[in-house]
Image (tube, rainbow over all chains, first blue to last red; front, side, top):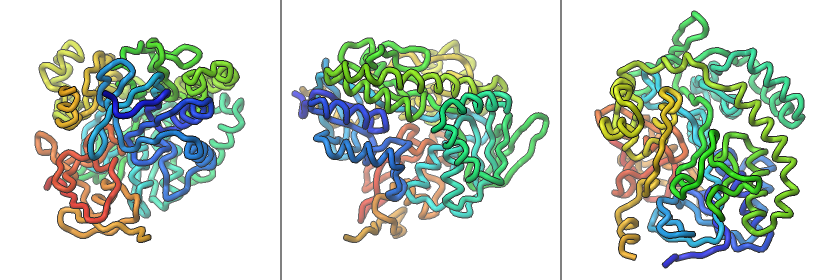
Length: 418
Length: 82
């Protein structure tokens, strides 16, 4: 028996999830919104001591004002029956029954292995920002930001404004591609202002294109990073390396439910409905497209899931223009081939089970690697190494089985007993 | 209402503002090592969003808690690997 029931269940409380929950609720549906985090907002609107951007505050307020049931600190680990998901919370678990489901599960950073990437204080770009937003003192700390994508600039801006000693930003993409992308920005005034605002804040900090880290050094924690740009190789001492090579969509729950995938993420139709009737997906889970696209998709999914396809259609045009921006983004920041030679044979690729790239490369595919080396068999279930190996070897993580997240035995047993 | 939370990290008292994540409290207590990997390597937080499980610690005797997803509570006892 389910413990709770609703018309529309929204998984994920980032921008897409908030927009979806809001629109579904205002259309008269009973909505439940679930998120792994203690607070809504997702990664991008993760509260930094009460300083959420105005747009975030507007959506957070709208959801609070509607009668959306907010289930915090809960993660989905199984789908035990049709139209039902099993959740694990800090102090227990529950089952939630829905008529429609909206997967707004967002994205995670793509990490690429290089010698030393497992040292403490080598983190994701968003990873270090999340810690800093939660209160980690970064004032005066030497930080290098590296990898690829616009997130690096947003994180740099945050670090700078919180007094970090930002040494440089290493962007792997070549300048020519970024210039072409800059021209595209001109067609999106809001984005242009955003980019210009960043430039002022980042004045004086080297933004090095065609540059990337080749190794990190330190005994028990990070002490320095070695970078390469063209033929030049040099080492910079630092306290933190914030490093990520773009984003990858979180599709595990969609795969578990049998939703078809596209090349970019969860495949959806014009109403954001997946190949499984009644299951929708919105935001980064359907492909990396940024905030505006996530909001538009979330609104469409929310309206459609609540039976208001007329209202959903009104958002189609806006979504189209944001999609073009997303395409340009992908072009500009595509990962270069040279990054495939970053890890050595003895570099760990699976951090959960400490499996080296050399051992994984001796296998013919993802499944064989799992069976023979335990790569991807640890608690992260391949969420970190899967993204790396997809780029390094072209393997795609195929099957997903419950529990899709490590779950406590009492929650698994509870299900088995019902 | 008191907006300071007091907890123990490896036996050392730490005071943090309410809403601070456990991962941050551990780092503020001076520890960059959160756990040892299966082959004994030092590890700390990577993703900061509950995906990678590198920041897991023992909280109030319960092992394998993702410290980046849990807010600090007064009286909490947090243990990292040595």
